[in-house]
Image 1 (cartoon, helix red, strand yellow):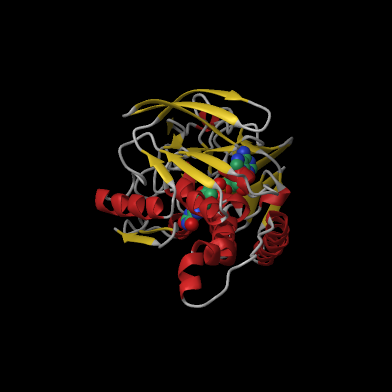
Image 2: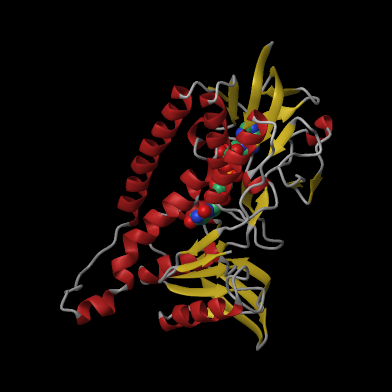
Length: 354
Ligand SMILES: Cc1cc2nc3c(=O)[nH]c(=O)nc-3n(C[C@H](O)[C@H](O)[C@H](O)COP(=O)(O)OP(=O)(O)OC[C@H]3O[C@@H](n4cnc5c(N)ncnc54)[C@H](O)[C@@H]3O)c2cc1C
């Protein structure tokens, strides 16, 4: 039976950085990632990096009027989604290979398998039992399912599926006006699609201050994006080339058809089927409960990144990775920094720190 100083579960930003720090400090470390093509986690594969590549690729289209006023001709400009998708595939393959190489170079053993706890001292990686003195859970998050709209990856999609599109939709309903929804609203609007953002709460980007949210709303509307606040999807019907949506809004019920519906109502912690109960690790609504040093209710198990209730951001995961590595290596325990910069990337960047 294999035995390690530390087993890290999940190869996203949190698990990758934590395992590398620990291995470089001399620990015998095993990183278990369930998918060989998913090293780098959400951030690399269907999060920060492809989203920013997509936004950057259409930035000049979004500034068409302004650029034309400076004398740049934007006549007959064409945009090919398939080229962008292929660019993304090659770009991510390169970065993923670099990330995998640097994990191995640091001396970390990588196992590609789904991990779950068997008891307080061991995990199962597919059928193999692995023991360790300490464990780090970094299994991240998945998109939150909508209570009504079922993602079919064709007409009703999640943010993961945007990166698989091969043609520009004529119209898009974005259900959820958080950071991710607003970023994609800008993307589709720059491509010439008709975009409608339906947000359940009274403000876009509910995590931001109200004046920031109102400024963003004004800017999106100025671009021609329709924004409906306090909106709830009440029913829908799929037709051959569109989805007909009924929505309850402060102005009554509206019904409209869209070629594409993007469901973007947040992220949920990814902690099911991890066997947490076998190792006495407590969770609350899926989030692993941790103390200020990121230690779970099992004194040998730390958790970090999107699977704990701190802001779901890649740089937060990196910072927590350092904290957890330190807390495993040293007797004096650290807390992660609570001064966190936030950047949202629609049109003009919203930058907040605190
Ligand atoms: C569209 C989008 C845009 C984003 N943009 C930004 C941005 O601009 N800036 C920013 O800071 N953040 C952004 N984020 C958030 C960022 O991607 C996450 O905060 C970050 O990826 C969290 O890292 P993590 O390591 O905790 O989890 P993840 O990146 O989710 O990685 C978890 C890993 O664990 C693996 N795993 C899960 N269960 C198991 C198991 N049982 N066994 C083995 N492996 C397992 C998964 O396959 C995955 O690779 C964005 C997210 C999305 C969806």
